[in-house]
Image (tube, rainbow, N blue to C red; front, side, top):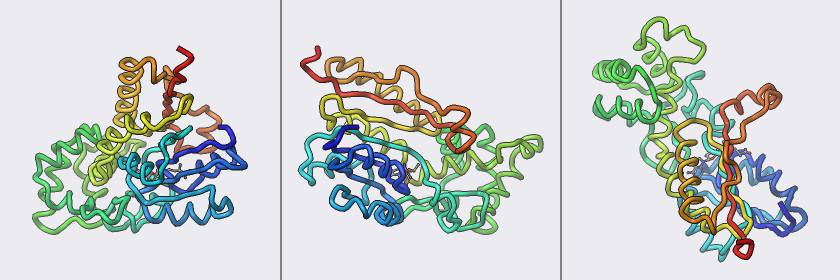
Length: 285
Ligand SMILES: C[S@@+](CC[C@H](N)C(=O)[O-])C[C@H]1O[C@@H](n2cnc3c(N)ncnc32)[C@H](O)[C@@H]1O
């Protein structure tokens, strides 16, 4: 990244990437930081306050990035980053309900202004629709068993906590699956989180829009953490590069994945896949 660059971090989280971008674009690069989670805005704001007017933060869903940039009178940006998924601080806070490792309310909303929680879905969706969500967003094998266990349980009492749901899922899957390294509730939690936050819809809506705001030689980089997200990124990038070869170039034919060393230092990076596209400079054609 060059000095003077204007960059958009669509998934601010704790502000780690944003800080690295600010350092790389010193002394006068501008960082627009976006996160739909109010707490991310607070945390990142605290971390980045030393950069003063070089930082502008917005609590917003990145699917609205076009309107946000227009409102800031920004017509083009040099770099856009989407680091998808959940922040460490969101996972670590049991009150947010993202993790099955600690007890908390079944919430999972990144944006707490939205009204539907994971508990609402679990306690109100028809059994078939629940199974469908587990299948589509969790790629879960034991969807029918889990959806039935949820439907049976909620007839007796509402399912309100993370550990209650995790335990119910564990008991619903066949015995050999219970003792595998991956917790049997992993995919159920992923599926509910994606459904609550409509994650795939936002991603699909944002990608092409993001590319349209890139300056010549500007890049959009997306880090995906599961195959559903990565498939959307891969297909959208490929389609853009094929249909508009004079405008968009694939930077990564294959995704960039973490080295063994990086995984050792940061185990949560193990499933990360980074893909990037670049806006072509027209006179290079
Ligand atoms: C993996 S974390 C990002 C971590 C960040 N790169 C850092 O350095 O700390 C993903 C963040 O994106 C946010 N997020 C996810 N989907 C979003 C969306 N559609 N719009 C805005 N923020 C979103 C989440 O709230 C979360 O804070």
